[in-house]
Length: 264
Image (cartoon, rainbow, N blue to C red; front, side, top):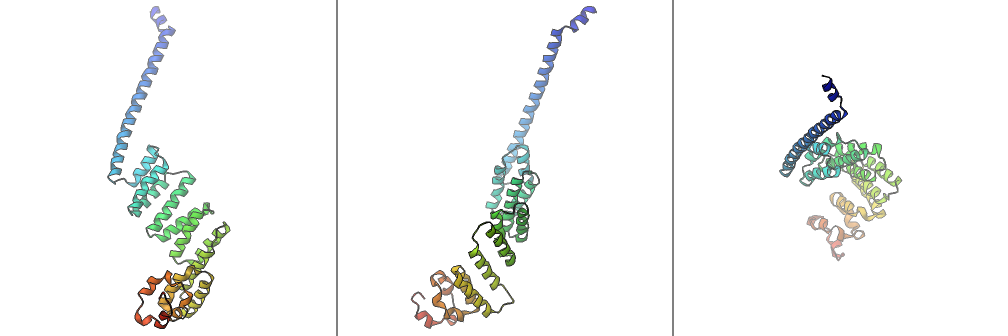
């Protein structure tokens, strides 16, 4: 019995037991790691096959990002495939799903920009506006978003708000004179409280300030004041809107003016 106790207390025996335990634990850890990698590869292949078939769901993008640590830019590139197909609703769903999993402020802002642009392309103008306004609350000097918001306000015919955006861009050192004239032109044309003749006078003033509104002005005159157009026809560059003139009714044409204008 005493011999057995001495053998058990032998330091060499303890060392042997220790190394056996370490080896056993390492073996189990290594085996479990291999097992996890094998399962992960199998799962990853399934996802790739689903992607090749165009069947990735919104949650799959989050899964790729969180589980496989796939680079953020790569995930965005995958999601953009829906944009190229014109499937804006699917792209929006992916961006919304990713927003729930991204913590970086920079990445969140990038996702919000993509979301706002996609809403716009999909025709969801109010949602697009709300997203851009949300971005500007914490990134007020984002000129890209300001310019996109300007277009949204133009489409929504919210011209006063569009002018506010132009003021912000101007404060950031961006020349907005031409845009101011363009927005003011649209505002006059769409103002239901101004008579056609008064609109014509105001638009003519803007036209003389900057010719960028020429086509808009001519379109307006062809619809509402053809007499004014023919009276001032020589003040316009007809070569820039020949397509508009081509389809005029014979009854709307002043042939005396046509005879005195080589291009006409």
